Length: 162
Image 1 (cartoon, helix red, strand yellow):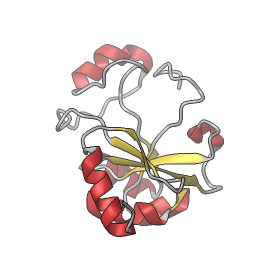
Image 2 (image 1 turned 90 degrees about the vertical axis):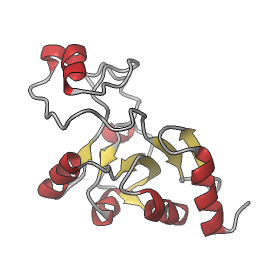
Image 3 (image 1 turned 180 degrees about the vertical axis):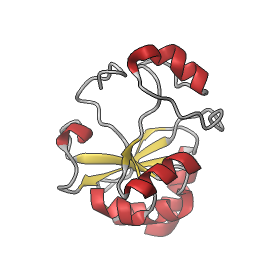
């Protein structure tokens, strides 16, 4: 929160290496299952009801947790090696454009951070699509790399909703 100058009410997304880790931090809503099958690992962040294992600091005191399984070997390796999800917010100052390279992150965050792991340029350059599945009606919170249309098609096919 301090390094990013991020407001404390804004939740911090968690990155998981597998569905086992997801179950540690969130209740998997039925609406989420088909989306997980279709879009994970990848650029889909799901907002789910949190398990008691998740600190309210991470959730912005919302009772919900944002979770993603990235399609990149470095965060997957870190979460798998630690045996637990990791915080996976973008490497930028809050409100600023997301950094696409380690050099960009260094310029934006400067001496506020101890280390940068350079995994190469971010593929695609778009943020993840965020979908809240905590309510009866699925809600696309932010459209990113995955179009809302694709999300709704998978959800509709799996649930029978129209």
